[in-house]
Amino acid sequence: MKIRCLIVDDEPLAQRVIERYIENLPFLEIAGKCNNAVEAIDFLHEKEADLIFLDINMPKLTGIDFLKTLKNPPLVIITTAYAEYAIQGYELDVVDYLMKPFAFDRFYKAIQKAEEILKGRENVHHDAREGDKPEDNFLFIKSSKKTFKVNLDQILYIEALGDYVKIYTTDKMIVSYQSLKNIETLLPAKQFPRIHKSFIIALSRIDMIEGNQVKVRDRLIPVGTNYKTEFEKLIRSV
Image 1 (cartoon, rainbow, N blue to C red):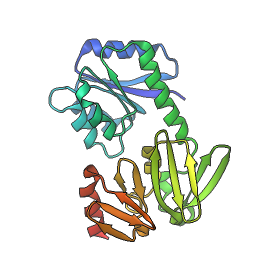
Image 2 (image 1 turned 135 degrees about the vertical axis):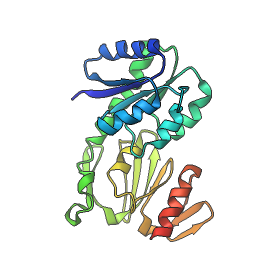
Image 3 (image 1 turned 120 degrees about the horizontal axis):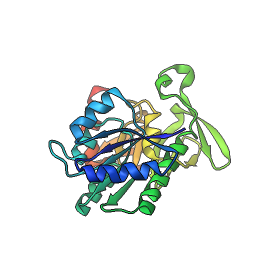
Image 4 (image 1 turned 60 degrees about the horizontal axis):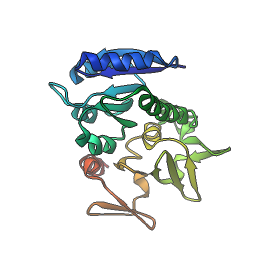
């Protein structure tokens, strides 16, 4: 299966470089090219992409602001000449941050990271669209050479650990090779909100909320600034 790539950059030369690099890798294909983030929004309303190569400094809407508008974005590799945006990019869980001009070997390293994340999604045998059905209230989670069936009502919280996630349940902790963003898409959002770049919690398992922290059993979990408003809205709606 090919990885469908969307190039979003207002510089024609930068587009051509990425396009040429993509053509050198047979498992990649170009899904589309956009000259700015507004075009990219329209594209994603009509079509799908697995991976976005995203410039930052563009007219109309910056790449960072565009990324913030996407509820469940594809994987993103930032391509820019501005190093000062790196921290913002990683806070938004981008796969990698390529500084222009970048060579093919650096490009390929970023692609390998994206490929590993996409492969990790195959480790979870669960259709998120069916997640509200009572008979499907579980996930199959692959951990090393074992696959665990995890009932959703057993999950306490999930923590990011580099390229892995740690899933804490009522009776065990499971380490699985996949991104937090991936497992987030497989869980009912209202029951399992993401409250920090490194944490998803089970709403029903919260014992206490105090300031910018929630308590789940004996663990205090921070509520990130970028997630606080949505989390507070969710709490008020319960």
